[in-house]
Image (cartoon, rainbow, N blue to C red; front, side):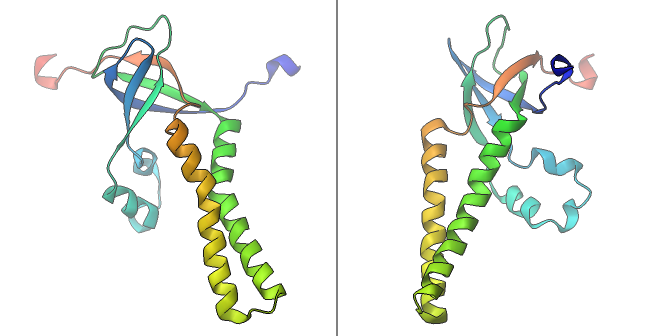
Length: 157
């Protein structure tokens, strides 16, 4: 029975911009999932994502797959890795904010002191996120599993 359990993974297609002997550079559009969302017209995250530029990520080049610049690769990230990253990015800063405000209130610093302590703690909560993002460029948990050659234009098929 335990052998029947398949770990869940998030899957996305990304365009390859450079191929090295051991690494691939892919173009990641941060709003790729927004096109399918039913709430996209009123979504603040979607509006902010449209203002940001796509990000270049480096991932390990899989053995046995022939990949050229311009191809699309299907990359996957395990569900547990995604939950850990989301928890770090969203939960840690929020917990730091609550801890900072609670500590300041417990010390009797008043509303202004609690607000300033909360802002300071919130900033500190983002430090581990920034350090991890800088160190691994957010792509070490991604792995390429399939390659898709670019489609020919409709006029040339």
